Length: 512
Image 1 (cartoon, helix red, strand yellow):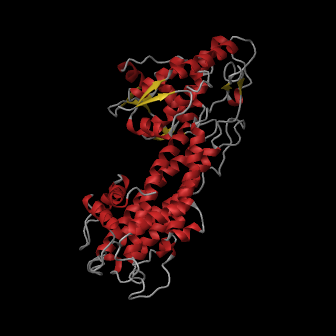
Image 2 (cartoon, helix red, strand yellow):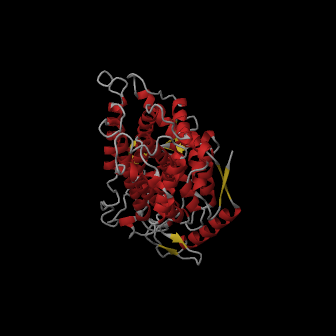
Image 3 (tube, one colour):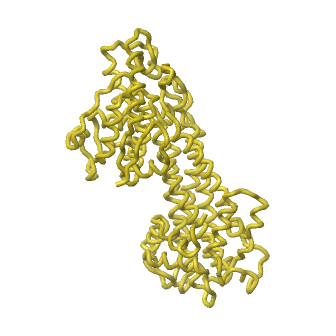
């Protein structure tokens, strides 16, 4: 099994994906353990002094004015975890919780949090044992980090609350820790606060969304090319010299992908034959511009994720010169904006894909295709309701595109009077990404049927490969009406599982 070594810095998005999705094992480097010990010495020295230090010998948030005596500090750290583990609603997905815990461990190992090495080891042990704390949908405002979700994770380290074992069964955390020989931790000064104060949930979901959307933007270029071909459109608009004079890199990449997919097509360029038209509709002609803008948004979001991944987000932080200073680095705005930007771009990509599908189904705009691609129109409804489903998904995505980060609800007696809502932005984006997969699956299914109905015209080798992959996934070809949901599910699996891209790239080579 792949092993990820956690040092004081240098983790990558691939490391996060390996731990969150593939169950990679974690090891702590000697460098990280030394940094943890050094920072802890600073915290212990401050804890021994009579002067109050936020997070070490005071309360938290609006209660930070109270100095806490040494005899109550263990109780203080335990209480903050218990009280902040106040999430509600459905359970969050296992991969999200693993990313959340791993990213918190990454920051702990930076040496800027003051957490003891044994706490970091316990975090790694819990992840390696396949124990996943039960974290709930609601509870994070994305300021002071993802407090409630991280608190539920910290609760498991203490041997309290519930967690999911490697067998997927939810049981008391204490039982699961005992079965794997993991001793619960007793938190000391600053440790409870350090385990809760980070943007780890929203960052983990951003990293996973970036991986998923990178694949979906390739899939969108393929389905757009297939629709262009089915509509007898022209590929002249994809010429690189046209995109060079508007030098957005994402646009050029999408156009190049579409051109590669359409190479050798016998369908493109027939738009002048029976129903002359000067230009293709925007949904066909502007596909690279819309998908390209989304790709450039992905590039910006990737830069934000890389910067956040290189950060040590905590409050207060331990500095190399021995100071323990409060700060506002826990505010989720940078990540929240990126998450919202991606949801907007995904909604627009889905919207233009749905317009192409609708055009394929409309006999007045499809240039010779039967109404709704039906076998016997009137007796058969064809793909009429498949487009309804696609439209419903797009409508939902437009609602999900409303920015969460534009909202703020003050909390903690107005101490935390401006929050990022980044967790909510991340949760929306996960739903939007799922829906985009389904929208592209419907376009793939409709465009494939339309191409197959163009008798006497030969599709491009790459689009033939796409159609073959779809059929091999279990989606049937043209014919009389049948139970359609299984075909759409097979198309979704073809997109989601990477079969579509793999089949096409065997013909075109790696797409950009």
